[in-house]
Length: 480
Image (cartoon, rainbow, N blue to C red; front, side, top):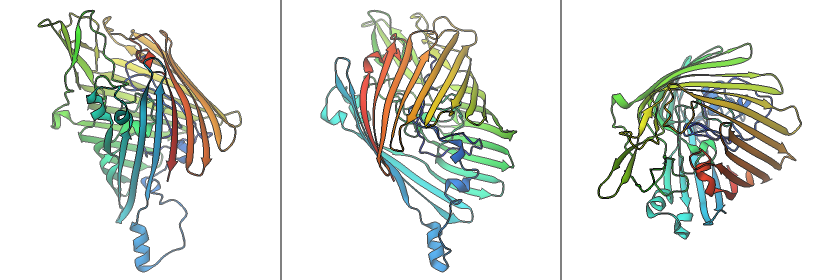
């Protein structure tokens, strides 16, 4: 398994327009490393994606009978409140057994039209995890960080000008195409405090950005500038899924300094270009992106006095990425692929004599996936991926070529009940994640889920590091 980040789920947030028509409604999927992996819910079906920004605001939906005068003006500018309320209860059964999540989320958003092709959206989410109120299993710093959070979601202005659309503000920018994989989703930051287990819309952290999009027939161009970047939220040491660092040598203590974020300034802004075209049913895109890495690298210093101690600090370095995506609908079979070349990312080393504990490594990551919908009410998704390290340093944990795969099975017994299982594993070593789950849509807008998350592997594996975090959970969700 590589050092990226994973996930999938039904994405409630909007993404860029997509043109491929999927054969059937997708179900769920999931991960592969700190910057890319899979998930556990259904990704957005391209068939339901808007062709223009107007569709994102429901302007292409059937309307009620025409109104006139003040009533017409009022209805054009009014905006209803949408969102969801979710409760997740998770219990870890490996000893020491404990509650690991008692999360209640309330997500609210509203949007409207100012006229003259100017539209707006505002949104926020409140998270309250009662685990840190009713138990004392975790350190106080973890409780303070994860008990209660208010998060700004998408808050932006949209301005239309002929073939151009401009979006200014806090927004989701989704460039990846894979089912349940974030390999090509290089712009988004992620909330990693619950690892890759939540759905994409919960995991993704919006960016403060200026985005310009050009639409012409089947061609789409996208320019992005992020003056003040958001970064992955990795939580605090001692939390359930604190981000991985190589273990120090025996007899050496570990200390974590506060994370060091890049200073604000033009040198630390992010910017990129993405071009896509639809030809003969093939949706092909390419992008170039330069950024301060959203995922941190843990720099290390070892001091001998007064006691041998390894001091770690999470930092963010500039990286440059070139990539592409493709997709093709063959009826009951959908092919998708992604490739990303990353230059400048640094990786932690196990060599205790290394001065700062990190080395730069350039990588080429590719993934291919097939989505099968031949069988009634059944979906099968299979994906294989590889991360190749150029000039591989033997002191990093990943091998020069890391291979992995994922399998997703989903079956609907009725409109109200479905089961699924997601398996993600390394082909290089014993390192895997299994996520069986049942969903019961017992009432309109309501659903109840029960599932299990099982991690297995060595302490240095992407999943194996959480071998003692196996959990059973329930989730109740109300959408409105």
